[in-house]
Image (cartoon, rainbow, N blue to C red):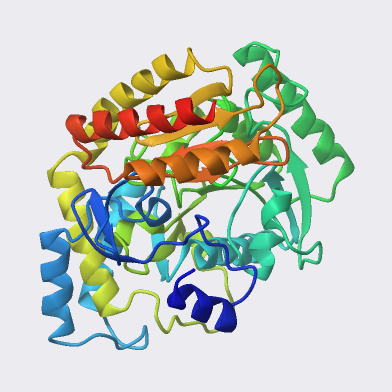
Length: 427
């Protein structure tokens, strides 16, 4: 046990989770690789929880941050901020939401918190629809709508939350249905739920559930939900904190897989846009964003140095078509891992899109989650030089794979080979 780990335990909360039996201190990175304090190199397939979106130490972002730091770091939203306006213009145009307004925060948690404030104020209702197995952050209100017991430390909440079926395709009461039947059953459940509840303010949903193990419904589920929601004026909030910016390859936003009934009323974003800088935010229709009747500011949301990082990072992402790269390289990686999974009884499913891939593990010969195996694979992958994540709901255990979107084919093969060895050593 390192001295730094001892110091960590003595001064930080017990519930502040760390990966690995011997926790890592990462000291620097370049491209898709990082190094620890002992000089070991790792291929990074988790990107600081899907946050290092383009690459570690990306020169374009480093240069923009350095130049901005030499001018002014911060002024708050009480003053005009050119870079904040410029990034807001770019995101508004990309969002697909009509007549959009953008508000910047420092995290995805704060972004979702803001979306809940807007929805409940606009609709004058504190009832929220959320998905089972969901995760939306660690604030008091975000925990109150999180449908994942492992990340929900209290049942107290300022909101009344009603949980809807549909976020997990291959488990639960509708798992054996075909995709159209699955959607129909979930819509029927939603209609029934609405018949028993006060009119809700909004449905908040991750197009692909992140902490829940990269699970998702069939394409079109949220479009079908939206038709029902619109009958009562209920808003749709797409939580794009993990799915945004082209990570899924097929779409720039996760909601676009469910866009047949139009875009969401609001979307929230964070993580990858700053490539490690603290950037989050909400895009909403102007009438929703402007519904607050009291003053508000953001001390650190949209500050100059984070906006510089966000602009440089977004420019790089678009100019180098990293969405297309995620589609191509991610597709190859998924097929490679499915080939491995077919030979291992402990791998139930390889799922995902683009460079957002989940590998669900079970006890061989059963359909029971195997969290100990997930931890063992995590450790074995690290020993082999690969960093991955893990997640899952109350009855699932999954490995989470989400490299920077600039991942090369050779690096994808390198990571797949290491992960295959780790899986085979465990099963």
